[in-house]
Length: 221
Image 1 (spheres, rainbow, N blue to C red):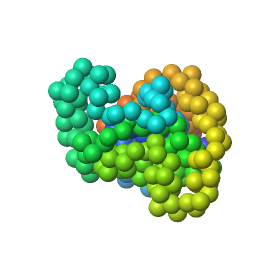
Image 2 (cartoon, rainbow, N blue to C red):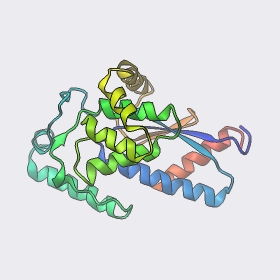
Image 3 (cartoon, rainbow, N blue to C red):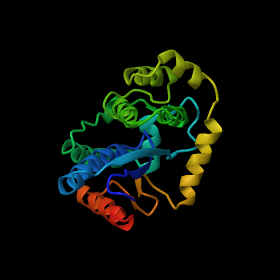
Image 4 (tube, one colour):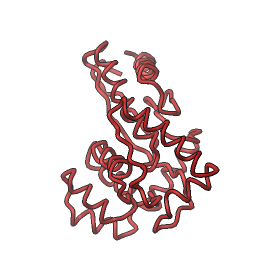
C-alpha cells in the first residue's frame, strides 16, 4: 500500500445498538490520534449490517418490555442505561432512552445504508440514524422516518421512498450480515482494518488507533 492509499475500515454494527454509536465516536477520536502522528493518513469507512435481534417483527416491538425481559427486569435495564449514558456524555452523546417506544426491525435501515453506500460514504446517514434512535427516540424501522433522514443527508426523498417500498437488496443485506458472521463477528461494533485485523467492541480510542497503525504497518506503510 502506498503512503497515500486509503486504509479501508469496515464497521459491523446495528443502528439500535447504543455501543455502536459510542464506537463511532471513539473511532473518530482514534482517527484524530493517527492523523496527529501521521498527517497524510487517509481512510475509507464501509458499513456492514448486523441484526442484534433478527426475530424482531417487521413492525417492531415495545422497547422497554423487550429489554426488561432480556436483561431480567426494569432495574437492571436502568443500570445498563446509566452506564451507557455516563460513557456517552464524554463523547458528546446525550442518550434519551426514555423517548424510545419501539424496538425497531433494522432491515430497512440497513438496506438504506447499503443503498447510500453505493453512492459514497454513508457515515453521515449512519450518524443520523443513531441520533434519531437514541436522542430523538424515533422509530428507525419506519420507512417514513428513514426517508426524512435520508433527505436530510441530501438524498432524493422520493427515490428513497420508492426504494424502501420495494424489497430490493433485502436478500443481499441479509447475506452480507451472514457473511460478517462467518468472519467471527458475534457482537457489535466490530472494526476490521484492511481485512487484516479486527477489534470487537467499542474500545478506547488509543486501542483503535494502535490497531489502525498496525494495519498500516502490515500493509507496507
